[in-house]
Length: 221
Image (cartoon, rainbow, N blue to C red):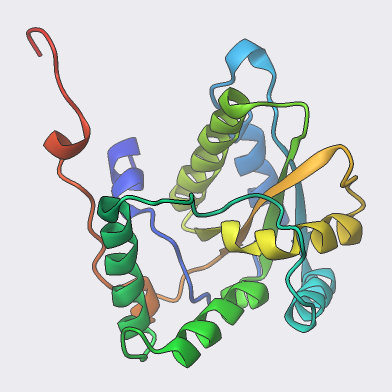
């Protein structure tokens, strides 16, 4: 699979097969991803990979816990312009329908959200943290590292789902994994496993803005 194919094939997987992931593959992918871009070579990402019973234990803890207060960070910006609301609502609506719920079904949305805390049945998950000393440029480095991991997983025949939604239990996750809340921010989880090819949640149409809506070319390009 070449890079363009991996980019096109990557999507957020929300239904996984009951099949373990080879630990050697995970180690290889993460080792390769260490070459992701990093300003000043800070490499500001830190992560913990969890599998097996430990992952199940963490899932049970999150499912039984109340969301933390105050929140780990502001996930959705305040005063969000309508353009971004429309993009969000469009993809959420298609995801709801793929899961068998009507758009706007509050109970269905809550059930779908709860699946995040069970990692959608994935056998492995990675939890990424950022040292609090880091700023916005370093957060972008972490995003590039995570994208590199996700594309390499596609190349190995695996799927993933980045889970910022776990931020509601950031401190619980840090305590469980032995990460200092004083020194680190929990950024996101990532469910990892073998995608279920027949699951509607892995097959609904995704849309992206046309290039001319997002990018301007200046000069002779």
